[in-house]
Length: 262
Ligand SMILES: Cc1cc2nc3c(=O)[nH]c(=O)nc-3n(C[C@H](O)[C@H](O)[C@H](O)COP(=O)(O)OP(=O)(O)OC[C@H]3O[C@@H](n4cnc5c(N)ncnc54)[C@H](O)[C@@H]3O)c2cc1C
Image (cartoon, rainbow, N blue to C red):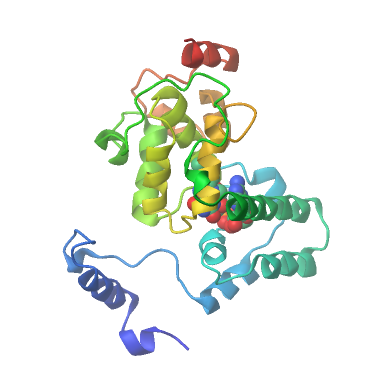
């Protein structure tokens, strides 16, 4: 049954929701735009059926690679994890792409189990950091980062996508978290809050524990990236129009020296 039959078009629904959320939603209601992503069980099932896992393993790290974008349906229980895994098995068997995809579902399950055991401790460092995290660890990210005005096109464009659509590709999440934690030395908690506020799939366990994984407080080493990695997986477009003195144009040993020298 289509929700539009009761509430009007998606544009009208967006306006009504904005009116209802007055005080939380700070734009004028008529400026509210419907999300690119359609919610609900029927839309979730359609997205699942449409998703072909072919090419997943080889391209999932690329910003324009073949990822499912099913995370918000999974996060909110609209699609079950087993249901998603089964659908892929039935349609694609045990191909390498399917195995890689199940591995990623496995990460989600692992974070959920860790959360069930750790409770609110996921919001505190689970282990001592393996490197010098330094910094002042504010509660909120600085405005220029939240508004996508750092001057680093790769970060600013990722933030713009997050704020406008509620989605950010996994690799861009890793780059952004690493930028916040290891380059800007802001700790992981303010970044975790920022993501949770904007991600449609925002999930306490996957989010907090992924931030800790990047920080090295729930992994054996920090996650770092360099410009070559961004260009390989995101293309050269961002770098070509970036006027910043790129802090990531270096080898990994050089970045480690720069970021972690105490
Ligand atoms: C800093 C950071 C914060 C994150 N915060 C969240 C979050 O709040 N909620 C969330 O669902 N995921 C989070 N992730 C994990 C991952 O980025 C998203 O699940 C993925 O990008 C969703 O896109 P997709 O559905 O196209 O993924 P696909 O690649 O198509 O993967 C299929 C499904 O597997 C699960 N999955 C894939 N990768 C991961 C992963 N690394 N960890 C856990 N589950 C995974 C998701 O349920 C996803 O829908 C975070 C990752 C990082 C690095």
